[in-house]
Image (cartoon, rainbow, N blue to C red; front, side, top):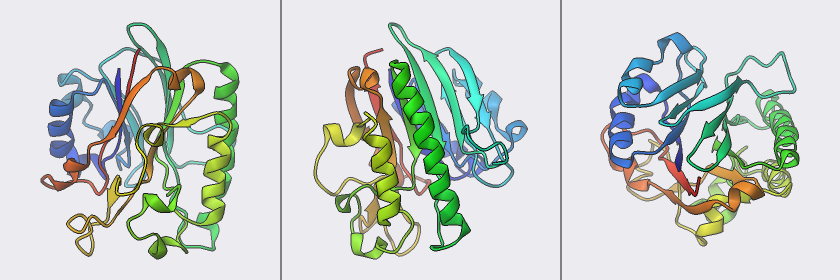
Length: 260
């Protein structure tokens, strides 16, 4: 089972780029972020015609997450528990039914948090505290599950080409990284780092200052696997070449392959 995460930076602007990648890479599931569309505006029929079941949690002009799946989906839920007043569309869950395993898929678009200090950063940390609670519940269930998406977290210095330029940014502040580690140390495996070590591996390149051409990137799109899910992992890779395509997102797909 090949599961990908992809911040597409606007479904309407990237529908061709996303469709081309889906046709070439053929993931069983694609967990999307920043669809920037209300549910009824999402081009559902287009992706259904490509063979995907579609579930969305949209928001006009901002945020928004979705799941495209060639496999059956069950028990879909929307919104991160813990704050009924939170109207931002940043979380979607579903159970995907594979050939041998059912996997609980949690897709997120974690708040950016800038500028720092300020209410946006306070919201980021509060959101991560709620995420930790949900992550702990998933661990306690002792089932194959994963949390994936744009975490807006640079976990380590080696995950940025120029870490010194990010030292005061919400993505790299010590409090942000500590909150990420508190989730990881519940018992999660950070899939990419379980397979690949060292620097030079990025999933985001800014549109400004020729960042892609200079490989001035950061790695902020992640998979966290419960122990039962980590036991199924066969591979995890970043499809960096997608960034060089026509009208690309500033992110690229990251995917895991599970024996499920």
